[in-house]
Length: 382
Ligand SMILES: [Zn+2]
Image (cartoon, rainbow, N blue to C red; front, side, top):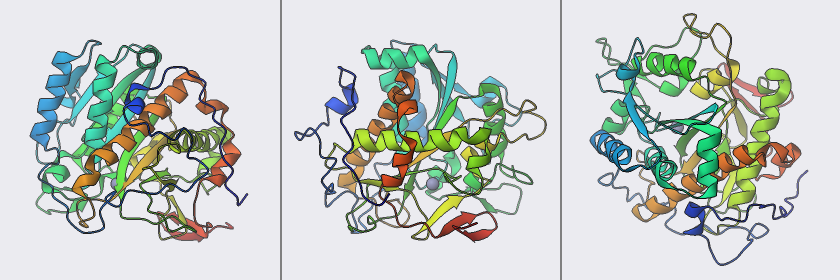
């Protein structure tokens, strides 16, 4: 399919999500019109200030504040308290996880695995606060359906240094991209060992990973893209269709379609599919959520081969290339909060699982020419 059809208004819930209600625009359905991104969302003017970006100390203070003030049992813990064999970052910082909810299925929410991609932290803190305090039916359903494991700052060292990677403390000062460090011959950095072991304790049903990308224009229209929907093993690619009989391939598409439809009504949000190099789908096995989908077993910690599907959100703009406008901060965080909330509620109600996976093709994207794999590019007709 090459045309974008107007998605039907499939919202069947009568209660608006609290987070969504505060930012709803007057137009009830703007899905068929191209969304016009605010000029400051994100800023192309290189006026990035990192002064207001959440620091590690801010994170710890905010987590403790949320734990104290939550009505519904938010537990803040470190991996040292959990008891993983490796429990701190390369530079010795505690690694934090917050849990909330009493549901039978675990959900893994992580942000800022790339230290210069800050808003995953703030977005997850905002969602955690809602999970801990919001008594509305949607949030109650989420707590009853799931137990959430929220990792707002996967990479505290890189966050403090405002760099993508973590820096090994073995004398080499080698920089390690933590999102290429789960896999055979990997687990070089302490953070990878620590969070991998925790993942094998949690065995989540699904995961969401929040990132940033550079500035991006929508293929065909040239409109500013504010949020791209992605995953590191591409639907229809060389890997994902072969996992779990194609179940994750289907669910990934359904998750993207659901978020796309639900957020299309917000005029300041313009989404597309995440691609790299203009027209390539990403298909890397060493990404954290890739390894989750593959059910990777490291050191015999995952003998049963647990695996889970996942998607990621890519907010446009990051602190390193000077493209993160201050005025865009609130909007960038809120689009993540909305996307996450809609996804979680849609999963809990079963709406996501009923989406037409074939409509994934309708989410704006450049014609796919190939797949960016760990070993280079392979053509789309593999
Ligand atoms: Zn990233």
